[in-house]
Length: 439
Image (cartoon, rainbow, N blue to C red):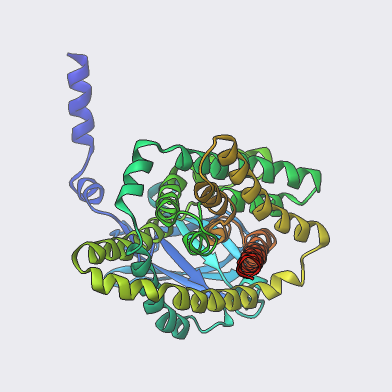
């Protein structure tokens, strides 16, 4: 009985005005999810629908998580039919921070919190002080994408024409190569990367950059090198897609585990949309190529002839862009970072090939597992770093994915040259032997 009476009293204590206030939001702000500031002085306008009990009784309080990134100067109030608060801010160092905006009302000596908006994300990107990462953005991306995007899609479609359904079925029945590749990419490589960064005593941010690079899935160039080096193209495509899906689970796990081990605090943001778009970007044109091969074999034969010239053109463009973007990082790279960047792709290749050889897999499969384990999609690691760190630390950590990407490309080209030279030498030797027998 007493409980019911208390409930009735509480309901009676809520006035009509209070009920209306609770039913509607009092504060509204445009682009509350994320804001980008590029100037020294910036402002945010917050609109209040609160009907004040007396003039100037409401006020706005702004709490800033990182004052090194952003500082509040003043809050001005424009009382019209709808009250506008203008928050005047001064930007500091590049980075990210969160704002909490609170609306207060004071009556007499007491103050009451009416409403608050939490986690208004602000990213400061000062144009005047370009980091190495920002300096790398001078490449005309729009023109580049207009030129290369159709070529990339056509190339992937052509690779889809080379998919063998019997190989796909056999891998599905015996997925050992895929399991070996996944274990190497997401377990052994991050662990080895972490141990090597500790041996070389790299700073925590750089060490995290290398660990994240080591936990990336296989890159899109894997099946191109599998083609040139006598690997299994169908298996390479399947391993790339599988590792990209697994990255949605394993990259958050590894980022959390190794960031805590390295003593780095903060929220690490995984670019889920980028990973999913990468997967769709691979699967869609390749699936189209497989359909063309099944329905239009003549067209498929024509597309297969385009693979090598298109791939070489795209590889040349990719090397140019990577080196141009990474040249700023190379200026800051010391010997330890350079040696580790050389070691990581070679380590992935060696581990993948060794485990496949121990399991007595055929030579083309061994090559494919090695290539998929050594060629990593380093730019996913770059996305994680840029989303998770403030700019000075992000620039330091970003040296890892760039230098690893450049070293990986150079090592694969060297392996390709050695492979082609050896193959040419064998063919020449065989031709000489045949001529000798004929004589």
